[in-house]
Length: 601
Image (cartoon, rainbow, N blue to C red; front, side, top):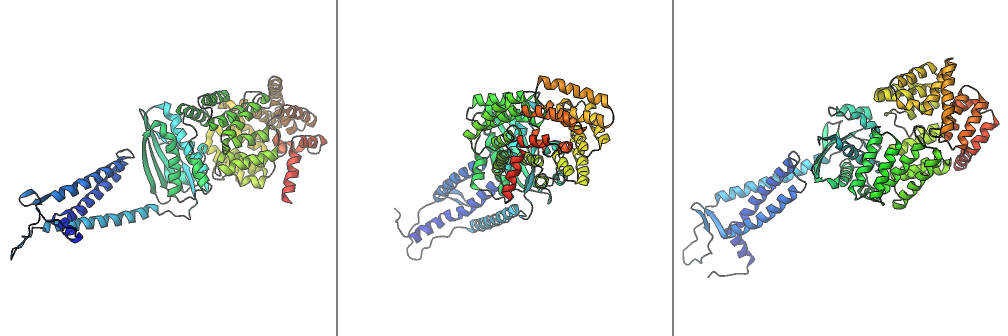
């Protein structure tokens, strides 16, 4: 029997004799190389997220087995043999040394490989993390490409894009997050990333693909810095389909992490919060938003019905209540089809329920802001709600733009201009530039707006030329919109615009025909505020008495257009009349003026 010893040095010598010490670095080097290889090929081959962890566990098990086998067996020139115990030597007998040159070389090479890989990883990691923190943290999330081969997955693909943008809205340290509306123009798969980044005025672009495979989903995302033409982050998610909600939040957090955006604890919690666990309810809301964003809906009723079905499936789905409120409310707006008073109070109920379930629901605060502005004419409360929504989602362009438009209506033009991105032309931006006297910038924005939106921009460009009092140009664009059969040309707003330019160009009969049609419409419905726009028309042609008659009717019907009474230059003809200032006070404008005055003291 061999002698046993508790001497650590003897145990170390025994480990060396059995070549266990030499097996460890060789195995570690091989394992390290294998892990690096798996990490490299995982993305291109679409391996699951858990692949690297699984291989690591197998290698750990293999390490234990290799230690045991190296203790028991030895590789000799004669083959694999069981390692014997050390025999005591007597006299001049000496243990014949084994040939160890090969093992020594393997050990040294393994140590060099490990050290080299560690250095490369450290250098590579530092290189990946090198982000120019002086760059503005501005980003556009381009529409994800649908690789499912099924058009019925378009809504989820676009929903993925929309949700990532919505999450990024919540991060205050971002300087700019381009809205979904603006990136929808870049759905072409053959897109030039540096050119798009320049057009949108951003330093980072996220693009990706979406593919539904049975009950699973594969999402590939890559974050690009167009200025240096490099990829900052690339990742592929292979998850069960029902986990797509968590994928969106993870992508948003990865973006923030890789471009070194500061994230508060509350912001991270809001991003990670799962709005609903009911997949069908979630899909219904995504369908409604897809139809809304792509203008493929037939009516606001269609959108509201989808939101209400989602509420039936999940009565605790705060987002569903918020969207139900917004879709319901805008059934009575200028492009709506419902009586104003028949929808606004239902919408208010949905907003309040959404905030009961989630006090930090920015969409519900936006809804309350809109309700207080357009229905109650409580502009003080409206501003508070706009600012609350903006606090929760500092980069949400819907909130920012609607608050900017609110400031225009309150005639705070200088403040309003700071809420619009001059890189992204819009009808609201053009109106602000005109009203504030920046006509040169307005013309540039009109050209850019037409270039981006094509025929869909014609009606608004015509309305903007009315503000510029260039009626021939206004007539050209409004009539062009009619030729393209733009359905919104039939709403009260643009019908009144047509009537005004016909009157200004001495085509009085066509103008009167349109107004007669609007008068008939006002007898049937308040949807779209026909009474207000008839009053707007009469003010524009200088018939004050008729203008006040119809504006009073608009007041009685709680028209959503009344807030424009203060800032729209068409009403300058009325401001020498006491009836205007009486209406001005009754519609909440004086109270807001007093509020602003007191705030400045």
